[in-house]
Image (cartoon, rainbow, N blue to C red; front, side, top):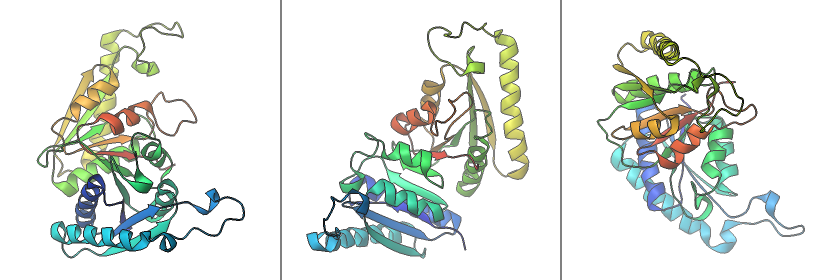
Length: 293
């Protein structure tokens, strides 16, 4: 059986939109949908000697179940026939979703929320979940074009291979074209975008670097085109600063896919600055995919 698509919801407009998106993703995959509502305190954050925190004691469980029923109505309207399960959990949203992600094919959250999901992108929840979750994370944001392409941020890293595979599979499921974007500049070999080179290294000659970056893009895309021959692919090599170029590429797209940490990232950081910039500023939903290792 296919692992479920999970979605975090709290009855906010953003989370209800995420439920609709998650339902469509589950339908595309032939997977069940699991709607997760988390609120209150996790056991690890209770004061010593305090009784166990129970949502029923605060009258919150009926409210949560009412919100879940509303979410299910949305699901039945957009994806009739898919299997739905509910999960109402007392605990912090980050911890709950991280645990749920261990047995999921995809996690979906909205860009803003209430209760346990409050300030999702204003705080660290989405960033932490993208870095530490056990499955790809989709953050629903912006105004996607349902007829637009799936945009893939190609970075040439080993960790980025999982993102490439996910983007091709997603484009195939959606019957959408794929735009593989590789952004480079004269600092690309060191992934540095500042005003000067702090390491005092020599700038690589531009034409030679452009040729190398085109080869990287071609090599990345060609291998997966053989696996997904039904996906129409546009290869786009862009000389620019990386973050603004990818954010601009998200205009008119239905989804952007990026790896959690790309080439040149600092060892030990599980989520790179490019992925974080997309989570905050892209014009359409963003999926961050961690490396398989």
